[in-house]
Image (tube, rainbow, N blue to C red; front, side, top):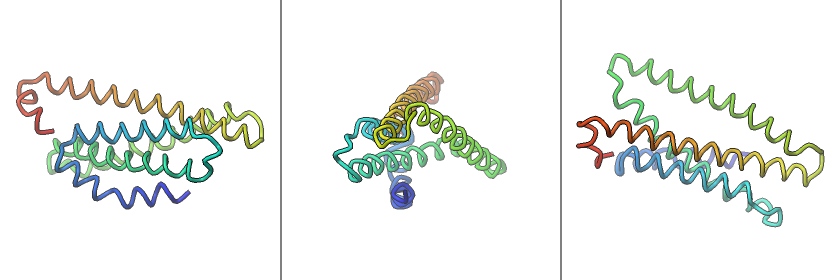
Length: 165
């Protein structure tokens, strides 16, 4: 259970440096791609792989989340005026926590529905179904991010600076 937080702690600063070096949009896409790969792997992992089959995709998922989070925070904060940065930061934190709360509740419902019985096989089925739904949700997030970037490029200034981020 501590694998996710440990990976997040170890990848937070390097993720921020990658965002600074390669730009918000590239790293947001890379983070969402890693999250998709991790979720997909968790939805397909055979039980025969045991703990390693669970831990490795979780490392990929969490590393991707850290990268996306660094890119997203940068994108949100870059346009905030200095006197509004505290409020914007607080709203960003609120939205992240609201997403975690609602996501945990909704994914718990998916798990409960898919598991249906109290057997090891049912638990594995519930986990696979939960991460299959998570994979779809991350793909939707990728589409939203791509549409957002395309919308931002529609302004002349953004089109000129598109290569920078």
